[in-house]
Image 1 (cartoon, protein in one colour):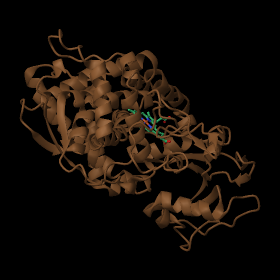
Image 2 (tube, rainbow, N blue to C red):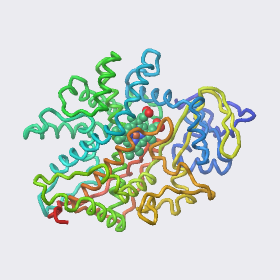
Image 3 (tube, rainbow, N blue to C red):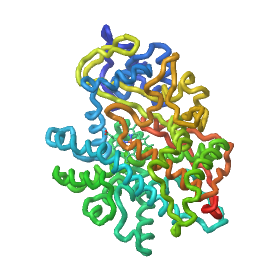
Image 4 (cartoon, rainbow, N blue to C red):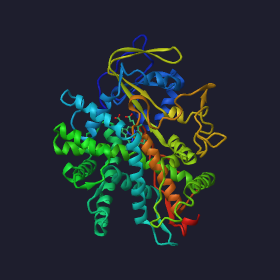
Length: 491
Ligand code: HEM
């Protein structure tokens, strides 16, 4: 996709067209090296709507936050599924669900997301996650008083990946037996390594490089698929409704077994690729800021204190109401997401049409062009968020300590001020579960462990080579020292 034919000419009524000096690749290099910087510069020169030639495709960027909902509402002219399913087929190697053979039944598969990631199913999933987090944490706890050292990213990935995997895909039949535990653990270490190896290649895969040319990523994806074959999943206990219903639906569609397993790799990626870095940043910023740390611990103590005194097995329970009441943790997570999210929302024009923006300005769009929204424009806008690159743990809290949702630009209140989960047709169906599981992770780790960053003053930046792909991971890992707290029941 990096190479395409000659550039087109701008027609009357169309937004400014920026094709760059290089005839084949357009402005791809400028965009890839610093997407936000490039888009800000272009916006300054050409205004709130402009078309760029990137990787051989024409992208019309709309940068005015008040026009975001207008784009989102254009489901008649702007299609999300075709692009998303095509991309997923190319990267994960499953069947073409856009084809007439599958498109009808895939619509039903797609509706499973919303049915199983909200309401009662969400509650069930959240409870299972809390149990699994405690099993995984308990196993890794050092003896009292012993300090352990590990990278914070490696610590977060290890715990969140395993607990999240078990929550969605269930446990090995032998998981609860003494000898089964070690077997599961080795397999889980391999699964997390495979997941990370596959995920590392994502920027290349997203840019259109065939997975066959990324040998390590291909092997890792196939190894994960091997673990998620229906034959193996049938031997696991406590599989989530989400996965069970997808398995039943794919069985009815008569896909081949590897094809079914690859759709589960896709689901595994969706459930982990953003959650792992989001959990990392949430804990990292909490440990770096004394105010955030103190406020978080006060909230966790308020919710958990007293709960364990008469509880023999020391299991922590967090009801839905308790999780919902943790406004400080929620604000920390939202602030971490604001700073680390660099997703791009893409729609494909299904016909030629005229887009009328919030200001009344119109822009003609050609069939097949991409319309792109880049939420980082909003997330790092100093008018909406003063000192936008600073972490402020209480940015999403009002004076009463309740959730804050009034943010302004040009003295107008914004409907969309935080979009790490996308919006409209592409809004993440797992968003409630994601926030719940990160809250649980923060609550349990801060409750059970003394945690210190070895070098709290060192500055850490997000890895912007992944811009456009969601939550950016850190550019490197940082050393964490941790030990079990001496007596958490009496805190
Ligand atoms: C889609 C963000 C966690 C399941 C998306 C999209 C975003 C997103 C931005 C839209 C992608 C696009 O426009 O192409 C996040 C973030 C998460 C997170 C920031 C964590 C902090 C999860 C979790 C699950 C999940 C935990 C499931 C358990 C999905 C699915 C889709 C999706 C299935 C595709 C939806 C569709 O095709 O309609 N996510 N996500 N996500 N996410 Fe999440």
